[in-house]
Length: 119
Image (cartoon, rainbow, N blue to C red; front, side, top):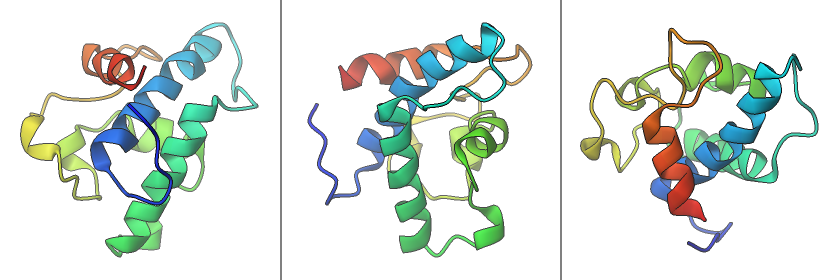
């Protein structure tokens, strides 16, 4: 996949987020509370997410304020429950998360699959 910063593609955004979440979560599991600097893919995906939220006029109070906020608040929600209306959400069910909600800092199989799609 190629990255085009001028186009908002929700599938690419999810792949970027997933690709960056995996190394971020590895650092969290290793004991870092806020692994900085953030992985490039996570930064790019997060920026795309914020732009998409602005384009769709998602209330500012519902937008993630930082990458740690995204990880804690959005990545543990089902994709279908995100305040952002994803164009690709029809292909995801209510059990599709990026991070296991009850297992701590572990990516889901979906997250790993999306990350592989980015490579």
